[in-house]
Image 1 (cartoon, helix red, strand yellow):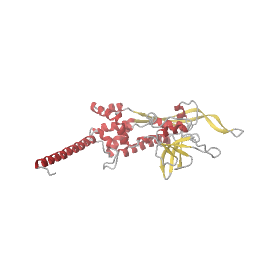
Image 2: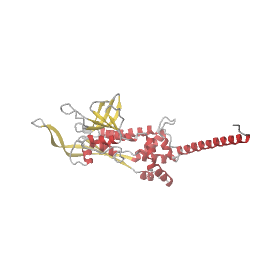
Image 3: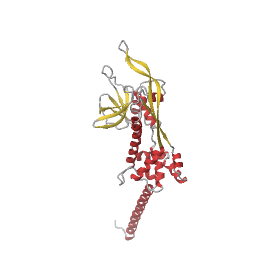
Image 4: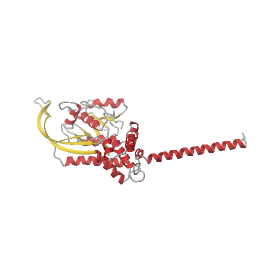
Length: 355
């Protein structure tokens, strides 16, 4: 069909109009992105290196290491038998929201450099205060022994132990807003950043770093003997087998029980497995895990056989060179670190939290 000149002109005009319209939309989108990057909401776009050699993740990871090193230094300089740590949870969205509002008044927050990282560190340590003290306690321990018939029994032993009590206190965002003399507009920005509908944006910005808080929290407990902080927290009045109590305690410290990320379970390690299976978060023993996964074991009995049921549980610290490195409670009645080949026969499988 041959178009008349008028029809041809009309189609050309319509086509050109569409191109101009599309170009306008693209420009508006670019402008909107630029506005977001230049506002406090630019913090949600800081997960990638934008040319300064650093990303938001790098700064967060470095600060978490500093935090862990501070606690480890307290432990190195103290004489104690048992360490108890309270309040170890880090609330990164709150810290980063305060940073975004405080920094956004003079600089964009979508990129990271040494100067900005220094500001973020300063805010982090304004939020967190670590104190410690030692305390002597008279405690009763249950010691495994063998009776005259060769049966394994538990014997109570009263002893004195020195406890190192480390406490991490946190300022609220409201207290920080007052400390930094935030204006009404800045307070509104702070509230907007921390709205529940932004939770997924925070998760994306942190890209899993916050989910690994359970690992440094567990590491602070290495060396604890007797497990009293964990089984007492769970509600037991006297000592019980406590590997599952330990995992639950660590999960609670970083908010994962409250948020439905890890179940609360004790006594039987196997109690935790159905929870992960029902949610499609279970992997077999030959799986290569990730830091923060929950590892379940079927350990051999005295006769060297296994019954096919999980009887021990821990937290995956890391994976390297074909081995799984773990943090476990109740290993000879203390918190310890172990490692196993990937696919070791005593590994039942892994609960993989939806971090």
